[in-house]
Image (cartoon, rainbow, N blue to C red; front, side, top):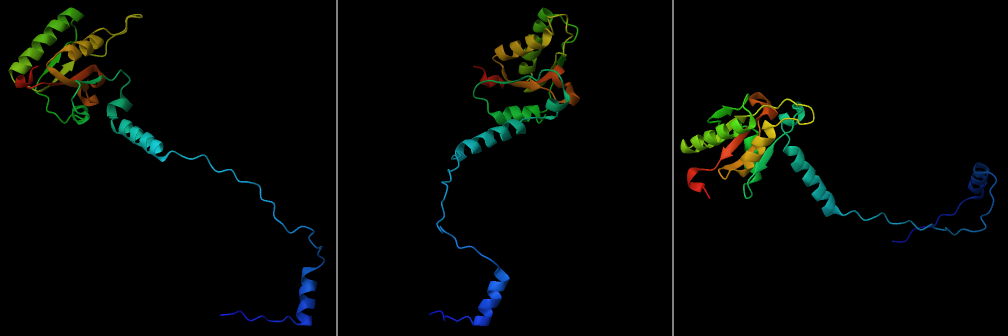
Length: 186
């Protein structure tokens, strides 16, 4: 379909010129484009990876991470799934026994803890709470029992995982300990 060309009357042209006013002819009607630099390419996969790492880190935070001021302990034996530690942190395992090590010197505490863990395994208890306290800073030495318990639990072949307790169970002054089933010793 072709467009019909209409002619403009002299009166319409005069009205148009009055409305437009004085105009100057353009000497150059070409547009000079300035080259637009392309934006730096975004690595979408890297951004997605960064977001997923941040989401994973934030999803592991618990009420203890915001309310407690002490050092949060968490450890799993290689091969133990992260979901196990997450459940342990949130108190999903039933606490089947506990020992309070307040008042013991380090060597006495080691003997008590070793005996307690052996008895717990013999009684087929899988999740126990160890109360070690937050420690009183003595000059530059700092707390002694808490780091000792941390090291002992990591060295024990019977421990699968442990983490600081929820605030209602002692917070960073206690740990939940997940023990290996007796038939899993190795």
